[in-house]
Every structure is written in C-alpha cells, then in structure tokens.
Image (tube, rainbow, N blue to C red; front, side, top):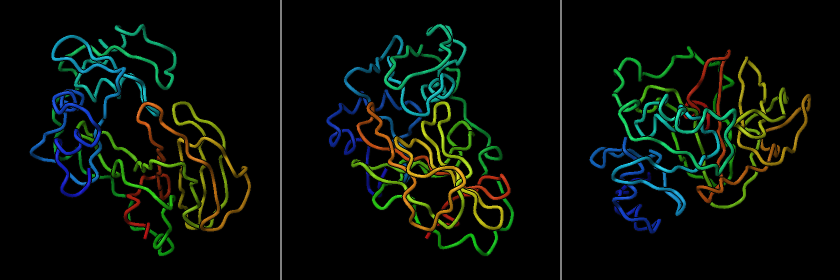
Length: 245
C-alpha cells in the first residue's frame, strides 16, 4: 500500500475485480489501510469464491500454516485437504477450505515489537539493500501476532548489495527461502538477504558497503521480484528502519 491508495484503485491497476481482491484478502479492512501494508493479488489460476475452498498458488516463503492464517482457515483442515505435503513448490496449487481457524484478533500486547535493547553506535546510516524498491511489507507483527521481517519488492531484476561492511558467514540455500546470504558486522550485528536467485559472494569473503551479494529471484505467481531483509543484534530482531538511512 502506498499513501493515498484504496482497494478500488489497486484493483483497477491490477485489472482485478474489487470483490475478487477483497475475497482474496479476508483479513484486510478497507477502512483501516496502512502505508506499507501488503495485499495478495490473485492470479488467473487462483480462485477466491464466495463459498467453497480457495485455490491458491504457493508463493516464495509460504508454509501451509502461513497460507491458512492468511485466509482465516483452520491449519489442520488445510493440511488434510492437501495431504500434508513434505515440501511446497512455488506455483503449486493448494486447496484452502473456508473457515475460522486463523482469523481471531491478537491481543495488543502480543503485537508489540520485540525490544533488542540499545543498538551500538555503529548501527546507523547503513545503506538500503536495493537501489530501486518498494516496501511490500514493513518489519512488524501481522494481524495474527507473528513477527515478520521486512520485504522489499521491485518489478525489475535487481541485485542486492551489502548494507554495511562485514563478512559472509553463510551463502547457500535454505528451505522455503531460496538462496540466502548472511553477513556478520561489527558489534554483533547481522544482516540477512533471502529469496536470492544467484549468489555473488562466498562464505568467508569480506565485503564493503555496496558490494553485490546476489541477484534476487522473481516470484512468478506475483510477477515481480522480492527480497526478504532481516537485521539482528545479538540474535534479536531489529527494525531496519532504526538502522538504514
């Protein structure tokens, strides 16, 4: 969501009927939209009916539990409807029975952000990991109280860069996160770059601010590119807005 957006405007830009957009985002209240809020845009293959199960194409980073939460379904019913697959593949079609399993509101206390404590003086003025981007999802808790890292999005191929000087501690694949780069920085800071397509660095390598780390992968279901970006201090999650300039 950008400033001034309405569901109707988004539906028109995406050439999606407004009712279909609303049905595909049952947890979104059109009267209380927020800048940076993320909406799910249904593809032609997907189904958001007034009754009966949803038909959903798996997106990068999905689990059966996260899919169930999005649609307010019972996770057990989603698992039963799909035979509890050992792994999910991007683009795989999932049946999501309609229900009330995941739509309950979360107490305000559980939605509060974690406090990583005071950050070191070195943790400020870091670069953004993409040159061109929009914020598809802000760091914070979703409507179900689950803490979500920041997600950046772009319509064109992009190359993720190091936000600060550091060393590559991990450069390999992770289940449901694609190729991942993890950097360690001074003062026990750590940055994570996930949903990469092609890695450009190796473990043990030293990097400077702006060093290319990876080419980010395209999300075929959403027809754009995503980078999941996470910051941590001493292992505790940190809001990137506190560190990036």
